[in-house]
Structures are given as structure tokens and as C-alpha cells.
Length: 207
Image 1 (cartoon, rainbow, N blue to C red):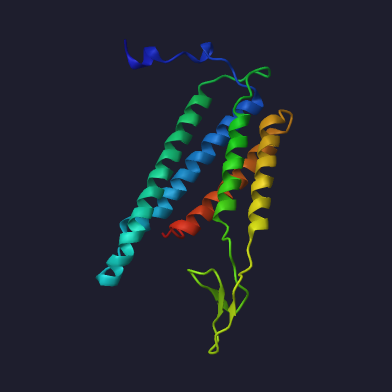
Image 2: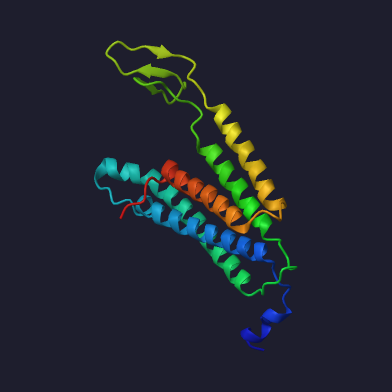
């Protein structure tokens, strides 16, 4: 038995609705694109071309993070390619399955939660630096002044997480939403989360 003979013919697979097919393409493309972007962004941190004693000390911490991010991106890319391949094999029928709409919903929720987690908890006003240990704000002037309790962004973090959860459930369960709207919303959330995740971890991708 050959590999091609073990693959179920397209005609025997349950077809997808127009919305379901669009959702499958959107979910797969977002995962594939996010994975490629994360692998590209993490390459400099993974290879770390810095030299010297201080450079090697810095590379010892960035290489591990770059490797983890590269493997995570590779997993996303492989999963996205698999979703795209499975979606292309199914025919389209108005009364077909719409299950991939849940894929869009999960992608939106995951992207929103990533954004919420990556938003810094503490921040300082202009002219102050945040101390690492005590999370207080220290002025950058010659006469040091402190803000012991640094302002937090907990409200923003909770708001972004709640909005992503609500939006993801709406996209996943509302079958009558036009597929271009659902696809654009999913791509916007996943794209923003991927870019921000790369910025906050391995830095901006370099040409």
C-alpha cells in the first residue's frame, strides 16, 4: 500500500461551508505567518554575533531565549501548514461544516491573552526609571527622587484579556458573520500579538 492510497479522496471527506473554508485558510495562514515571523525575529538572538567577554555574557542569556522562540515559531509554522493542507482537501458546500470558525476564535483569544501578558505591569512617568527589584520609580535627575508605588497597567491587561475572550467567542459562535470580517479581525489580532511578542522577547527582526 502506497502513501497516496492511504489518503482519503476529497470526494469522501465532509465538505466545508464557505465560512468554514475561509476560517480554515485564515487560521492556517495566521499560524504559518506568525511562526515564520517569530523564527525570523529570533534568528539574531539565537546566533548572537556579539564578541568579547561582555558580548559572550550577553549571548549566554539571549541564545536560550532565541532558541525557545525559534522552536515555538517552527511549531506554529508546521501547524499552520497542516491546517492549510487539510482545508484545501475539502470541497465547498453551502450546508457543509463550519468547525474552523472555532479555530479563528481560539486564535483571537490566544492572541489577545498574549498581548495582555506582554503589556508591562508597572510604568513610570517621564523623567523616571523603573527599578528592577522594588518596582519603584527613580528620577533621572541629579537629586534622586522616588515614587515607591509605581503605577500599574493591571486595568489595561484585564481589559485586553476580557475583550479578546468576548471577541473570540463572538467570531467562533456567530456563524452568520461575513467571512471577510472574521478573517480580517483574526489576522489583525494575531498579527499584532505576534509582532508585540517578538518585540518584547527577542527584539525587532533585522534584515
